[in-house]
Length: 359
Length: 248
Image (cartoon, rainbow over all chains, first blue to last red; front, side, top):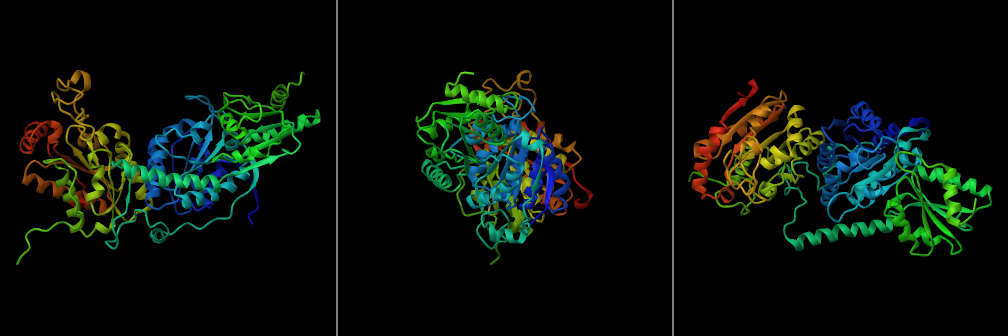
């Protein structure tokens, strides 16, 4: 068991990726995730891997695809506008079924926005900004510990499903420090073992097998439809296997919050504040944002008077909350944007307004 | 009996989808012949572009992947990190490399990436139906310059070989043409040298191959070869711009 260490989120994410067996990282500077790129530039070489500072996020995601088609375990990180530039690559990598782990340390938007924390990349992460029928598997940790625990699983899921996994953190998690226990290091895959582990990878035929081809273009509509349906079968399987969430106090709640990431931790404090005033509040904390834990909403008792989506965005997750509630409860939004963190009293006030409690 | 002609093991027994008179087939074969002669077919990884030659992997008998538009040099960069012992090449057209992919090719050259880029310059966008490329000549009629390319609107055609030759990391840069048998032989020599530069890990190697697009130029195959010779070569001079001493 590793000992407890105090680490900044971004550095912990990077170290956790290396310990998960990642040996290839391609990055482009963008705040608030630069510590990851810097950490990888220092540490990946020592671990026997390679770091490239790309000329753009578009090049970085393309390099990541290149490393992964050649059989490497690849990790890539950026922040909101940089992730926007990578969407071309995400769609392409999903279509070619290449494993990859992506970290978004998200910040305020739209556009250049701000470098303060934000959660307004919810649609971008869960609906995709790229073209076509594809999904990233998206996990949103609410602590640095949870993020580093998710990291080895993210690599495992990416390789098993041959689909990119995104860890959606935010500037709070990236920039804060917490005591954590890092995952046990997994040894890196030796190059000579790649053909056995990933027989599809581009490793050279040695003139001993037919050539491997990784492709995205299907000019015959029937062939493309077959491909899309084949990939969709993975997404349907993921909806059964990859849903993760936590609930707090749903049983006797009058009001239920839905919150993810660092906002979920702030919401827990709001629940304590409300308890002091005699209001019983519960929480659904989605950990997987795609697939979204719609089934968690079946656990909300019919006596609940209101459901509140707490997010640092203008009701993006609320769309999924509405699907989850299926019209059973009134739904409202509790939100701050622009890089401002919402406070527990603000959440509590929004909850009381939703309950019709006059202050 | 002496064998005077054989199919290359580097080419799969497929009929290509390229138009009659298109020189992609010659470029494909020259690259594959060089790799076969050097015994490198089993050690090679290729990256196909967006454009007509996205189909290259149907014909080239080496491990290959498709690429997003213009990103092949970044993809090859990633492949190189994971497969340091392989021969890696990108095969890119002029829309792919000289327009949407200028950032990727310039920075791959700048980093001195140890792979080879074969740049097919036919002065037009082929697959999308004959639009102006950055390499289209002044006065050349395309579907987006129906009165001919005008310098005051679109600038002059970009000379990628000369541009890349200014970058220290690009150690081998040569422009060749496929308009005659003698030039095809010269093209093969340049490809051999470019691969040798990569085998010796001397830096980035680049071969620009002047090619035809009879369909979108609106000429028959013979006339297309003549048009290349009479119009492209005066603007895109043939020859070696850079070659390291180790392979001379």
